[in-house]
Image (tube, rainbow, N blue to C red; front, top):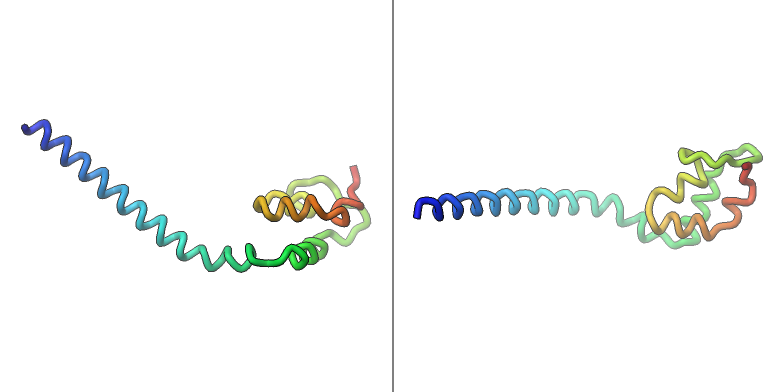
Length: 95
């Protein structure tokens, strides 16, 4: 019986830890939802215009991952799809 009680106590402790972790994750999601949601609701046309303004001023673009247009493809799936569907982002690319 004492072995069974120890197992039940261990399971209760694990359950409590998981419940606390779920509360922290839920709280974090609520806090971050306001930051992410306006960007996700931008129409593709607006996002495309913003992307065009992210391009460097010089005449040729390089394929570095830390600058536009490549950087724009690394943010999220939606941004990657929009950026890859914009020939104007890629027409000045210097290889």
